[in-house]
Length: 221
Image (spheres, rainbow, N blue to C red):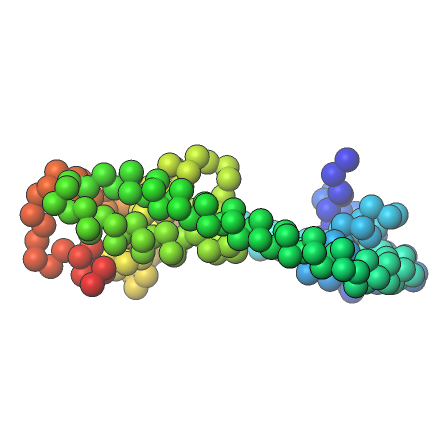
């Protein structure tokens, strides 16, 4: 069963349910802040608790978990004892190596997907490699929050979206544009710039000679 999520209340000692119901924090409870995933997971599995999150725009930010102070401290001590053992240290090192290997393999796969999407004419093979490298280095770091880090869509679609996003920021004036605060206007501008980027990529796929002031070549200098 998934956790019931509460919003922060109007006062520090309350939380608000989705239906607007306000609940008081039980006596003896404290807020465990986010940051230690293992501790949070064990606290949530050990007994009654309130998970608190706050939505800002389209994003949801964790505020932590309210639970018994005694329970949290007991679990914290037990977890610290486990983490002090040699076995835990070896497991942590093995996990780190596994994550590093998986990241390295993903970077390689993503770079290949970007190159495949670009599909530049042979005369622009070197330019394609530089562009793929730039996009990959920007999009693939863990925690970057880019489209390349989502698993919801195939890597081929991630590669295309990452290229278009990179070009929007590096080859257009998007970042300095003054866009009307009208619903849908920013999306409209992004679609227009995306089409420009796609038209430019098409020139390189055909092997055509771009203008001397090509924004893509300037961005990759």
